[in-house]
Length: 113
Length: 112
Image (cartoon, rainbow over all chains, first blue to last red; front, side):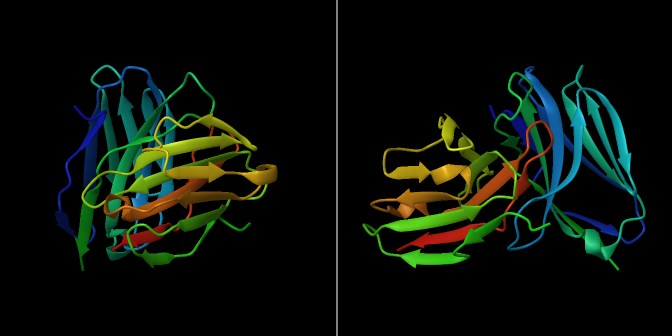
């Protein structure tokens, strides 16, 4: 079983829609949760970084972590064509201040103009 | 502030040859990581440096891979001899500590 599971998509939505991306994880030791955005032929770009359970908002993006159900979500409001990319959820443990990241396989998102 | 840079962006070599990848982290970042994504798989951790010391090399596939970080600045990842299954995209990332890791653009390695 993968430690971080993510539906690979692809997911296609019209411009302006609310996008919901989700992941589950299995390792209870995970304390930090991240969403990365990756454009084609580019490196992953850190979008959101959260510690433990709760919500974090940054502009049109909201990250949500529910540790009781081991569920990670990213919501994108007022989606734009420029949001079209692969979104990677990721997690790491809290036992070390800079431990390795475990990635999901990524969800390919396409925003239709 | 310059981001993480990697060189080369692409490398095509034949099986049995040697390739060396280079990573320059964000200035001041003590933590440097190497990751790899092979075709159809998720990005996977290879190893972690804190300054010049290897903190965790549990993800290194085998002894054909050698990573170094001289002086705690840039890092190199050497593959010798390269095999077909080593093809993929090699990412380097750096961080100060508890915040997220910042990734470079990657080196796309093709072994023929």
